[in-house]
Length: 250
Image 1 (cartoon, rainbow, N blue to C red):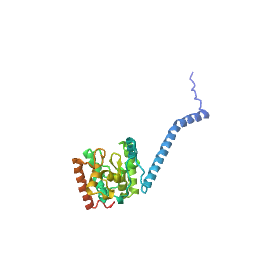
Image 2: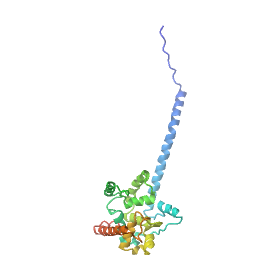
Image 3: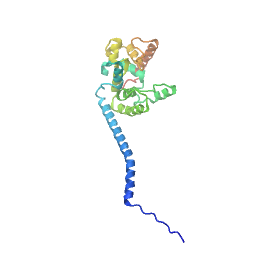
Image 4: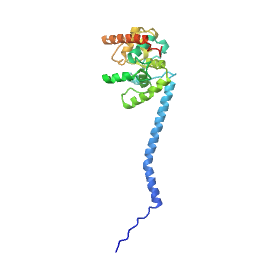
């Protein structure tokens, strides 16, 4: 006698709805998390863009480096903001010659300098003055992929919104030039007891030569190596003035 085939009972509508509901419960936390991450990212982007626009006209009140250095020292750092018009032009030229000779020629990234730094195994990575301003004003000092990614994203925005003169002005006012001494205004008084407008070519070159290691170099008591570096910077400052690579800030 042949066996009769057994039929599966059709699933009830209530069972179907229950399984669908369980599936939604499983996927909902991920959707909520994605939504929160997206909203947080949009808020961060909006805040950064607001600050980029704001600091094109308003001087940054402090930086993460100044704050952390002041906390380490247990006292406020020395910094007095000086408009670029009140800084000796040779100081601006010296800083550019030392840190970013093609400052007026690039849009935030010096590709040739980056390639040269990679081929030479340099730890500085060919960072431009714009990148250094972005790192110091908007970000932090640690070397990690997140900071580098944010720096790469913010740098074009700063180049698009700020003038080159403004970028250089901010740089000259936030660069660390001795322990707890930030900016050309404080450094000129600290090392040479002069106003930044009165800095000579030699003094300017020595201040620029202190970068990027202000805690191990002194413009007031220069080593033989720093003197050689300063002489090279002075020559570079004269060169970029002669060939026109100062037009964007002079």
